[in-house]
Image (cartoon, rainbow, N blue to C red; front, side, top):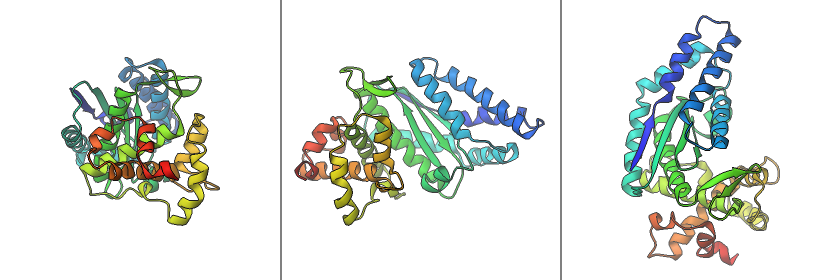
Length: 295
């Protein structure tokens, strides 16, 4: 088995240094172009749709950085031992859920230092898996970023394992399961996130993800019937709305919280089942074994 961490932020640092003497926006363009080419080469063995998604995500998450600010942040990642922290997180994840058949790379990139979502909601770290072979993790050094980096790497490891067991591709703008050609549903996405959070929290307890407990009883009673009737939805926009919220009718992190509660409820009701075993189950089985099947 091989899950390796690639400190891609070191290469981006090289790109930034090459662009130091350019006008500000020309420097951003140069860093973007080089990063886009770099990501294409890194992901060249993946399906073209994943390569394009990876390039777009890496450039979007980079933002419009000031070169001096970007270089200072990259120095902080180096001094803070980002690569070593991620390596240790992988070791912990592998010990908790070993998959000898998993062959993946986790790429560490700088994030957008001006993004309120990254800095305030995601604690400076954001992960994004592309199938079972690659994960992009975007990091910006804010308070406690090292612990959140560990958490995110472990969380994304769980996604890599599930993506290995339930391989998906992109067809018609949707994620589709390769074995059945069925599209990913809201239930699938909720359970995948719930498993990843439950797994990460079982491995490390130094952080408290707000998305696992974002609903009080009143909000849960109001939103669960609306989400329940949409569990079979496969439209990516609607899935994201239910997972992340919409600042209107769907509370922030609603789908994440309910997915996590489904997984923990399943484990409470199936005392002979471990989290490692639950991680291998389809979402429908976890829902059926949880208290949410009764409500």
